[in-house]
Length: 364
Image (cartoon, rainbow, N blue to C red; front, side, top):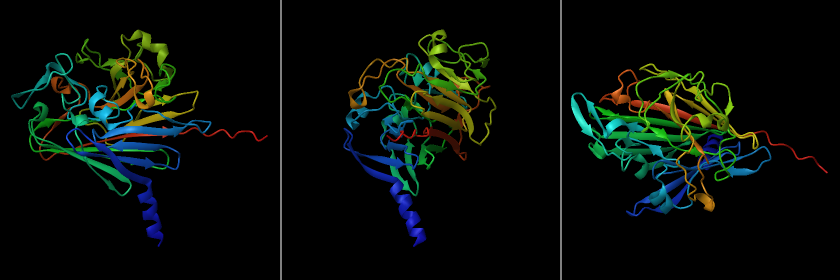
């Protein structure tokens, strides 16, 4: 009976329901993962998307701290900013929307000026993943067929979401291929720890141990240099309010911060970023096996409305996209993003949502 009780507990932790149908008629499932810390997260099969992260502040007030939409239709038609999605086959940019691999050239969609961004016109964010509950995790799988968006090889990608009782969301990615290809997977959640749609993140404090960054051109393609952050507006090694340094970066941050540069990154998760909102007391800590993180401060958000009719203004939220470097295929000294048959791409990122201690109200 003890085992049954434990199983029951596990089962209750994740619930699923239909989130409606896409325009092609396929059904989308949304999963609710709950933790005893008070953090409740929702993920859906369309786009492998984190649609909601609700967490209490120091007064016990609960807010949703990620940007999103109320309806599936809005996600399908309006989500050009990639709110919450799993990005693939290749997160971030590839210069000139083409690359050469083993002497063969592959052409990709130029969906970001002359470059390709986030997997192309119909990336992993715009497909309905196969999904199921497996014990204490949600498992999503997608087969990206050979030639999809111009990429070679049939790539089977899996992302697992699990939430522990401390409010730590673990995302585990794996991928295999039957032909040499490129892979770079990440999550594109936008965070505002004061609550989505409650002004800007300029007073959020960011800390990252990253000692270097990759400067680039106007199209955000790295020029190959890996520069120290010291003495630049990119130095967040000590926790600093974003608004204090953002003025030194045109359009705000959309920058690849480098934690490590080895071709074979460590397999243990390392601390890569901490975001703190002092008023609410909420914190987000990010740990990853990836060598870098794209810090994007929402410079392209334009006041369009999201969940609950709230306006998402410029700098209204920020992303911490753990990743391999942008355009890695054109820079042999960057950690490799090539995956070959017989190899397994494996990557883990943890979003730890730190709930502040709730202040006890004084009794009258």
